[in-house]
Amino acid sequence: MIVEKRALQMVVAIACLVPFSVAIPSVLHGATTLKGLHAPVPRDLDSHFRYLSGIFLMLGIGFASCVPGIDRKGPRFRLLGAMVVTGGLARALSWAEIGAPSLGHQLGLVMELGVVPVLMLWQARVADICIATSTG
Image 1 (cartoon, rainbow, N blue to C red):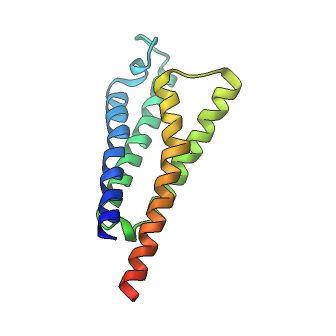
Image 2 (image 1 turned 135 degrees about the vertical axis):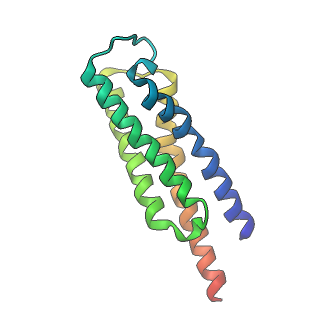
Image 3 (image 1 turned 45 degrees about the vertical axis):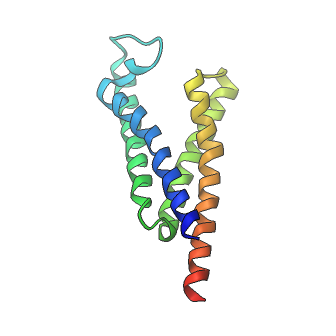
């Protein structure tokens, strides 16, 4: 069980690199980080983009805070995961209505609607195993 818990911790820690590597430049440089956009961008677009990037950064920090004691962080992990899946559903709606985004955003969709739900299930499994081994 310890091996599976450690493996989950490592995978989640590695997955946290995605929001950190995307959100930090986006917060610092705004919407111009998007391919094809050049300064000046509309102020409201840049403001909203940086706001959402800040939320994305905090999601990464939230997931990173789950790594220690991941078997006991189920409610937090599920809340963060639900936020990511909801964002993925919004991204999928955009794809359906407007068309395919760039490859980076398509890979984001894979994380949001594929990887994160699997990690949520894995975290629940590890938590159940830890409870079962501690009680008995």
